Image (tube, rainbow, N blue to C red):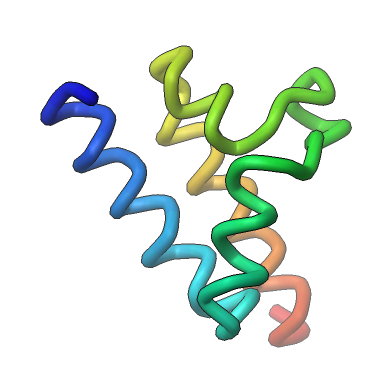
Length: 69
């Protein structure tokens, strides 16, 4: 795995921690769950495609919605 992929994966997992605090569920989401808003790709697929910022923006929007902002 490249340094960019490792770094981007870490960024996504850190952002997702605020939505899903359970590490095992967060990891399962990252590699298994297709995201409709991102073309039914997994978070891992999105990161590999170089769209980490788009994924983090989506996670941040979820966090804001959950906070009622």
